[in-house]
Length: 455
Ligand code: BES
Ligand code: ZN
Image 1 (tube, rainbow, N blue to C red):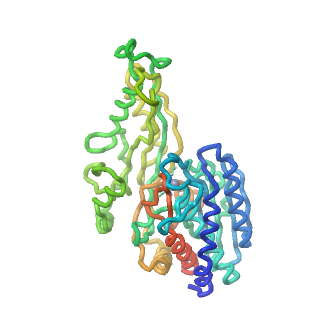
Image 2 (image 1 turned 135 degrees about the horizontal axis):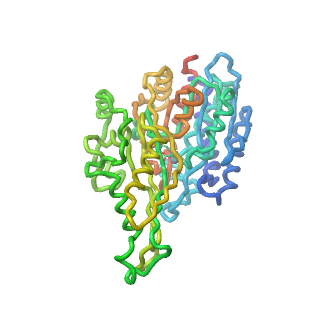
Image 3 (image 1 turned 90 degrees about the vertical axis):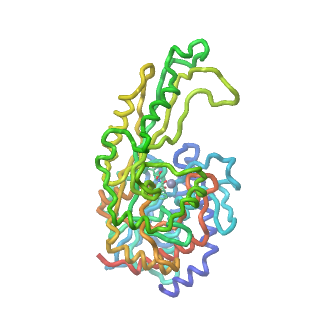
């Protein structure tokens, strides 16, 4: 890599980390309106970063949280890279499980702890700092860059498609790059070529018009909490297969080659159980844990509620019970079709004595890329330079809605270059990002751009 750029990266590590801390102090929780002012604050912080680098920059208002758009197009004849990230973060709850407060970034054991450290502030910031290194050290960039940093990824990216649709021309690029996934394991960097999709809903069962005395009325009216448990229990059979009719119809089967490739990755079941803290693995019969997580669809209750949740007993038949349910989808399952199938399944089995209401939420399609596309080699070279090891190819179980829409709306393939670890506690208390991975990520981005082939 360009020696002046390398030098800049080396000598500015502390400054990069300080700036990341400033960004992490902004509590940009997209799901909760109480944090609204922080969304603007985060967008303005990013705008100022880009303005400082000479990018043409704007904060784009949407029906939800703003999008930060920035471009630098002074490398005629060179490829154009569209970089995506999200400045919104998950709610920090439960707060009492954090060792240090979620919005007071703290470094312990070489890791920076804060909500958003790895998902996704620390990760997308690596691209901004790589751009800074090139511009400050050489006065220029080896490619054209366009940045889209949104504030609604953690709540389903509902207003992003409209932005992409109405700015197709402006967003034209050769390839997209996203750092919002994980490495395979510590010391094993990765390029991710597949993500699962998702559908989400909330189902509510209502029985009596108010909570009832369970002695006076119990046994004579349907209890919505009991009925919800019965309904949820029907979602899987004993083999862990989802029972929604047609659920597996469009599932792309794993090829023998892909199964072999997954099986060749180091996977220690004991270490995996230790990582998650469960006493045993569980899942669809006939598949390994990696296959279940990366290439098989699921149906999960994310939250369930109903009846008395306070201290001590309370003898009632609750009036209502509800569950938040999501299904992770794999190629070529269709989110719209499966949302209809899920609703029909629940309604068809709704027990007598309660009424059911179904509220659909966000969704996005699954994705796999051809892992031999022409940009992968450039990424492999850059990662090897920065991490000292070649990356493995992997899929991931999580979802990033924009990846499918980049393809659909802009015709773009995405390089998913994640610098995090799955053990970074994303969406959990004590989220963190390894400081060395932050710096290696910046290095890899800076090394990637000159490697990218022209269209
Ligand atoms: N960064 C994650 C996705 C991710 C994490 C993919 C680790 C692979 C490995 C992203 O921010 C996320 O959490 N996405 C949501 C999307 C949903 C709300 C539509 C998800 O997967 O739950
Ligand atoms: Zn996330």
